Image (cartoon, rainbow, N blue to C red; front, top):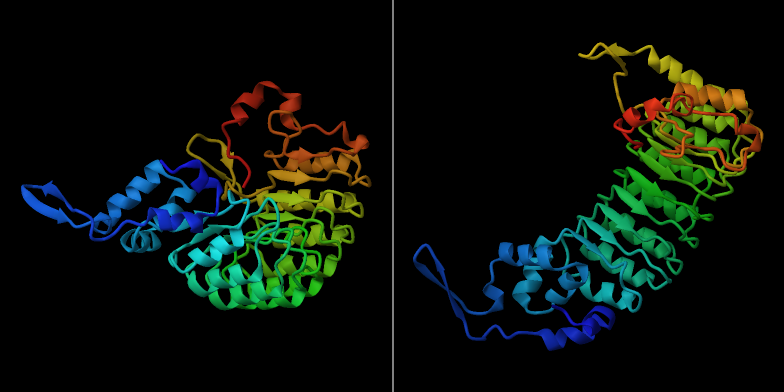
Length: 378
């Protein structure tokens, strides 16, 4: 097992103590009666090494093992596709810079931080070496600047998931350039990116990222209906949209999403106090339009053509202009929306006038148990 000081200290300083000479005494392995000489640790089969690490180790173990010898480093560099540095509370920047060139086949990388550590030069090292990267988490990287987004745009063209929530130094110009190069994005978390998220940036996302399925714009308070309506028309595959704290949007944004994004499963409107009943009735009306495409299954029950369609999560907390009839219409139109404590997917906290709104489970408690077997939210 790896000692505690390896786990918590500067791993670079520990690697030198772990180095094993390739000239160490070999052992004899027997395979079907044929003797195979292992000249050293570097001759351990890659498949066996990866299996040992996957069973006995974690991401920290992988990093330590990559410093044992060149054979292990090369094997792990080719075999490891997912890595997280989120456990690292100190020296993350130096660690990433020293290791990026070893793990060139990474497809999933998490650099989420508890306290700000990461700087542009580490992200540039990742972008210069990890060209197969698909998923990247840079959330809470308060020290990063536009340099990081430009580096990703040049080096990580295959990104499908990107989390830069809380990165408040990025500009909309850099985000626009990133989306022009990384056109395969499906999940994008921009929560708190107040300088990067503008209507102009949303227009670029709509123009470049037509496969987008999840977008978090929470607390980006300069967003208006103009940007959201562009998203609704340019990104019809959206399943989850979080507009919490986007205080400038009105019913126009919700109407556009209801009409343009027919697969929408989750919608966050917390503290969007310009939202009125018109938005709710638009959501309900589009549900009824789609319900005309119902078909019969083998048990004789009606079902939609796509069981994944329809709102399953709606947050309208602090939307104080809404009235009970409008919200009840939405709740009745989407069976996956619940006010009951067991699932509670229709969030109405802070709206005292909406306490009378209830899902079918509240009216028919005996149905609740059976409904728990149904599909959960996207």
